[in-house]
Length: 152
Image (cartoon, rainbow, N blue to C red; front, side):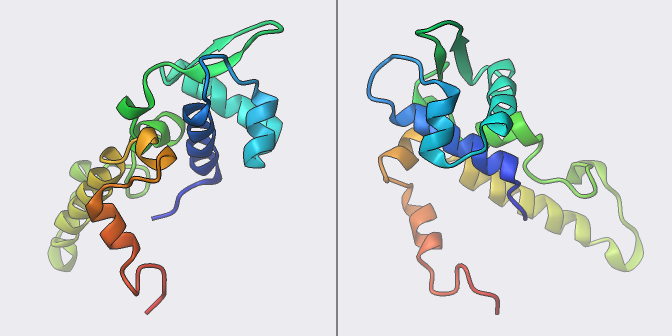
């Protein structure tokens, strides 16, 4: 599975908003600077997040962006889906809409299982979890496995 730059930037921007200590909106420039995200690219992402109901925006001198809901109610999956669509697809098709025959027949349940595991992890971690560095125990266990990030 590949996490796109768009999804990575969107999650980082959402985390920056979640970490904001006050209820004042953050300007896109401030988010871009804090997270080293290209400003123009971030503007498009924030617009998608606004249309997707994750952020609110306000124009003007005191304007900017803020989360539309509490950080504890927005999962990492919510953010990725808004900017990139489904979490797992094969050739742009969701696994349940695929069909295979012959030697590849058992491939479909494999793709469905992959999708289920990705959803379980990304739906189970909120912006608040990441900002507080308090990931769910199962996610921490997987992340700290000795071979978690190596190619066998």
